[in-house]
Length: 230
Image 1 (cartoon, helix red, strand yellow):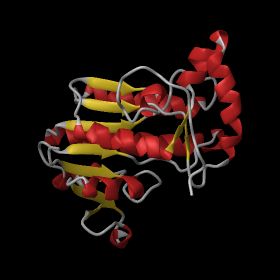
Image 2 (cartoon, rainbow, N blue to C red; image 1 turned 90 degrees about the vertical axis):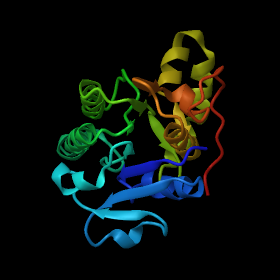
Image 3 (cartoon, one colour; image 1 turned 180 degrees about the vertical axis):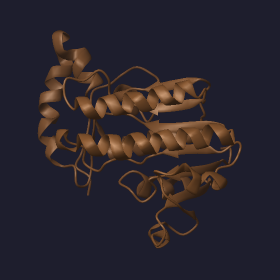
Image 4 (cartoon, rainbow, N blue to C red; image 1 turned 180 degrees about the horizontal axis):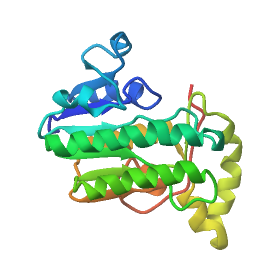
């Protein structure tokens, strides 16, 4: 495994707080952007960078040529009622991160987007699509993950939908949509993010739900299998 220098925004959030220890255990050198005063929320071994995810100037000096930049800032527990936050936080943060990453000459940009197209959460899907467009316009080599809903601690109610998804994925008329908008587990997301760091893309690689279920490895698809997280 190649040791990489990784810069993460959203390192104290739902995904970032769990991804950082995994990357450190794999021998990666990790720096994470945190609000001033929140440095203690990061695990030992992670270098804190105090700054504001909505102001690229506050962290630009900490992003280095050749870094892998992992963009994880986003509105917690997205819902249609949070459309204003999507544009004020999610969109602004990815805009600032892409601009900083492009100027610094990072080697790879990793972005958590959302499954597209989708019949619901239109404001959220639109903002994440704009983020993807910014990455392409900047000419960054990038991996873009497109989950729909992540099953894990604090996200338990969708476990009730697993039998429904299993059925829909088996029926030809609904199979494609059910797979594109399928459920993934927290462990599958973390595995895919770690895999993206280990294997940088050339150009823009989009990782849909079916590949996230395999930890980011493209191969024959299988059905969703989950067990409740502790």
